[in-house]
Length: 254
Image 1: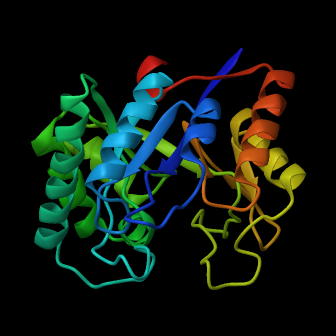
Image 2: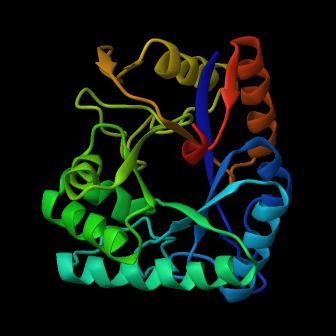
């Protein structure tokens, strides 16, 4: 029986604005990446999402992003490694307070959006992020794009890492994600996305947009909770896992 972690970005509502269906999505994932207030989320949403995750026995992770609420953290902002270090420490600390207050523990850290994609290729930025995570708690697991600079940096400093793959995103020949601004970046058909995930888990490969087969390591699969059919897809993916004899389990429990 194969085992895989399924993670989802959650806690991205703020104020009067509601994004996603966290309460229902949590029934189908094993790890939750909770926004820490920079790209999305607010203190009340953070507390409520932590409580929901604990109720569903879902492992909790901090999801630090660039300070870009208007752009949802998906716009590239040039920051120095020292700035990256500070914003990651700050956001981990913010979520840690709520996790501790609710009697839970934090499993991992996964950068969000543009920060995640920038770190995937920028060794200096990745090093700063890994150092920030290690400084706060060397027991935390660092999530990063499979085979990326962030994974390398985490390993080099001594962190446990989790190679992340994406269910609803297409890939390029170098193993990077297709930019959201490019045609075909998102996979709209559930069946296509599910087949891609199963292939990454069982055969450790993915087809690039260029038609080549790219080797890939899948420790955790990301599904997005803010799409129109997010809940439907989460349910379909879990059904497919059962049929393929794949068990969903948090990284820290493997």
